[in-house]
Amino acid sequence: MIRVCSTATHTVPMRLRMPFRYGIATLTELPHLFVQTQVEVDGQVVTGVAADGLAPKWFTKQPQTSLAQDTAELLDVIAAACRFAERAAPAATVFALWQAIYAEQAAWGQAKGYPPLLWGFGVSLIERTLIDAWCRATGVPFAQAVRTNTLGIRLDAIHPDLQGYAPAAFLPAQPLRSIRVRHTVGLSDPITDAEIAEAERLDDGLPHSLEANIRTYGLTHFKIKLSGDGDQDLARLIALAQTIERLCPTFAFTLDGNEQYHAVETFRAAWLVIVFVPVLLSLQRIQA
Image 1 (cartoon, rainbow, N blue to C red):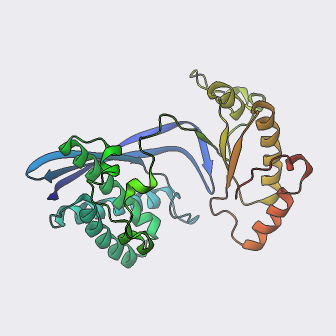
Image 2 (cartoon, rainbow, N blue to C red):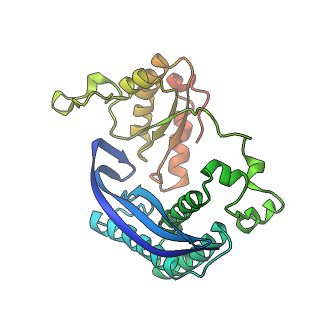
């Protein structure tokens, strides 16, 4: 049996080394929040920990709200998930306990008018602490816990078509030994070293521009943020294409609109221009 005995949260202020613009927000600093749960697993009390940055507008995309309001909402959904976790009845598995907490949070979040991405974020932190605590208590690494399903995951409870399947059916026999890094290109990220103003240059020994990041880390996969302005996005994609093609013999990328295109017609018009501009025709791996 598994149950949550207590929860605690702690935030640490963090400043980004360079601004990151995604959609309607430009991030320069944010609170980094830690959730710690005391979890009883078959009579043994262990600690589970999870952490995440509280990025404004990440889940809500509301231009009219202030930074303080966005942060307050994030803290509200996390506090609610902690309350529901503390009062949840003991369960036979991590999955069953998560399901009970999720159901409480869903009803509460819907009554508050919060979007699912927002209230679900709070539950995800508790879920992570439960998995961490379970793995510590049982001495089983996460990858093994998922493959052998000691977490008690019932895929059909999430989607009925998955009845009869276990998590291991969708996983390689062993964890991957390497991954390809997908580098996010923010809307304010400098593409080349030459476009960085002298007063804005970083002096911390790490790459600043996309050009420098590609050279330093050998990047080949990219997620490119779009602004919602078709002309601006086209001009930036052309500049990005010139740099990426020059430095990467092979590459792949996705485009992330971050909900900036508010009408299908506007997006379609921008898309039809993007895919037929001559300088972009060689980029045949476009994925929307």
